[in-house]
Image 1 (cartoon, one colour):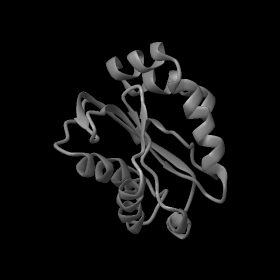
Image 2: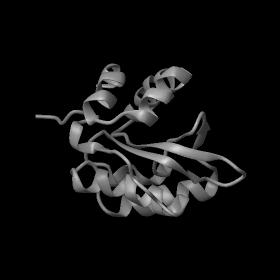
Image 3: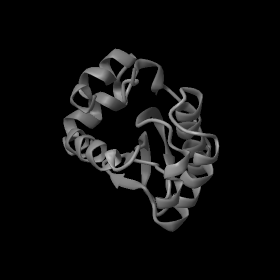
Image 4: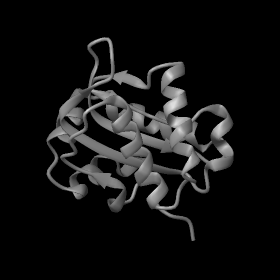
Amino acid sequence: MTKSILAKENILLNAAVASKEEAIKLTGSILVEKGYVEPNYIEKMLEREQLTSTYMGNFVAIPHGTEDSKSFVKESGISFVQVPQGVDFGAGNIVKLLIGIAGKDNEHLDILSKIAIVCSEEENIEKLVSAKSADEILSIFEEVN
């Protein structure tokens, strides 16, 4: 049986992180704990961030591994970390929502496009930043599963 791409236990609300690196590690550790990726995937997420920022605008970052990290992905999955106080992603870009992605084969492209649709609506971003429960987050992302 395959897991949900975004499950309730993949969501962390009210996180506080000191740096972009800490935020990415936290996002990746959820994917590791829930069995979507091997621990090495986190290093590839950090490597990817050094190549080019995963900041997408609208308070959203979508950390994911590099092209060569596919072998560390066991199953497609998403982790969601809400940082209401925000974390600086450099160049004055503040991130309040981190969406970690691990895509098996080329599934990440499909996942990314669905997330982009949800995150392109400012109203959705406000709801996600102020959500008080994992259920609220899930209802906004229902189309991703």
